[in-house]
Image 1 (cartoon, rainbow, N blue to C red):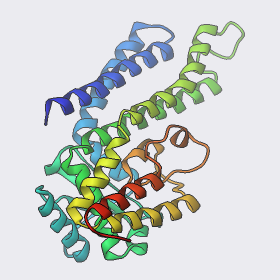
Image 2 (cartoon, rainbow, N blue to C red; image 1 turned 60 degrees about the vertical axis):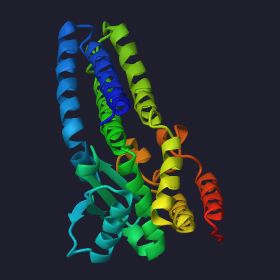
Image 3 (cartoon, helix red, strand yellow; image 1 turned 45 degrees about the vertical axis):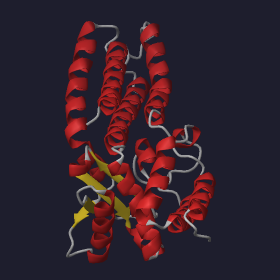
Length: 294
């Protein structure tokens, strides 16, 4: 792992640790015990996020690892693209949802997983599927997956804590229900509930949207079919815009090839992806440069 990737990984973990210690201070009514507990919790979370974040994300979406016997065509496509990209063949997982999409996860190319939804397998032809999988293989080759997966788990943890704090506030957990409740603690909790999800989205925004353009470009070169990826993006965007993903964690939005969450939400306000139409236009230009027209 390069120095730059180590730095970005450490920065994300340090940010989470600092944020959780601040939360511990607020939830503990300003006590150092709350800060100490939050620090220990952050250390445990950082450890598990680094080593098991891919398994956590796959569990969130009930993704099931499949082998060559179960999905021979899918396996052959992934195997061929991985060979072309010069990386080990990643594991393959299928997500049981009709919403078409795909993502890659893992901490490095040797411990990578490419996940596709049942809906994606249903609506794409072989060329389009190859284009999407080449995009995800590019994320693995470019070593984007560690930061993407860590960001998903850490942002998810922050959102979970914010929800827990909101329930505590609603049930009178910050100082009791009487009038002498500590106003400072209540104000701190309110600010926490408002700002924590924003901080979680900021973690996602640390994943540069330019990485999606890069994965599109390098994926197009790996597959040799930029037009197929462009056509796949059109189909995925069409389906997702009309039938967004209802289950799942918005903290993972940046991991998918197209943001599967729609509507008035933090996942929309803090966009994790470049506009799909702009990605398609860039792929058209790449295709023309390669002497292809569509």
